[in-house]
Image 1 (cartoon, helix red, strand yellow):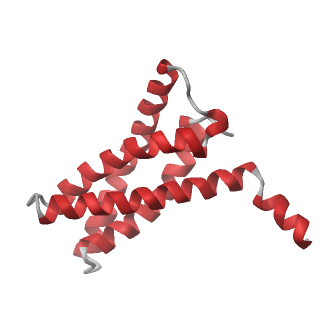
Image 2: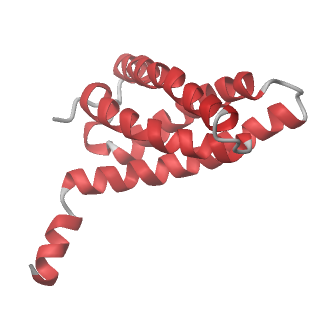
Length: 142
């Protein structure tokens, strides 16, 4: 395949979007974990309640960044379209909340993991689901 073949694959729009989505997601995962930790350790919330709040916070954060960078060619610029995209990503990511919370609970209660580590695994697994639906429905990329 050679060097030029690698470059062609690495520059393919789908690969670039996925790379950017992972960068945004990993950054948001760090923010989500920090917010979760603050809510549990200093706010006294149950880890599942804290995770729900932290997830919603990062849903909005990720939408803003993904709209501006990851899916910039399909980004929403008018207020109406921006709002519709925000609603769509909330539906997509909101539907992933039970998946992520279920995995978090299972990793903590069945796997014996610390809630912050368990949250990282749950974010990764549910992220695959979120990328597929966000790219197909929120930003309507085939």
